[in-house]
Image 1: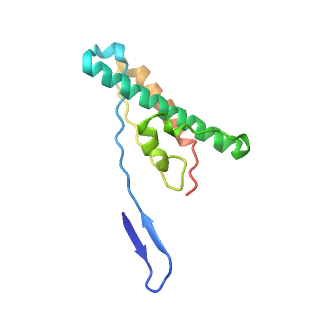
Image 2: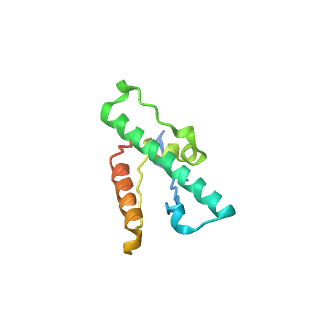
Image 3: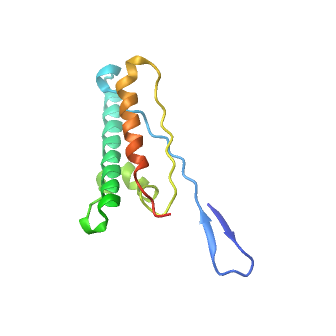
Length: 126
């Protein structure tokens, strides 16, 4: 956390940098995962699904305003609960997505591009 204040001023500016590395969204059927690895892949995919639900709800809230009483489901997963201050709040958020140039990963790459387009539509209040 960084703090900046002018000498003699009553206000202080606080800044905080969060770097979050989200796991990829590989299709379980392609990875031939079994046992613990399969469990982890399912957990990762469910967290990404809940993150997408939050992104969609935030976009609806921006589009329709608070008059629509849009519920943002931050508490559906631990990951979205932790990220709630970074999404749709009083902050600046940047997302970097990586995709594969290989043809066999086209579906995943297109899905990632669609997701980042939805993230770009979310307006934070900072």
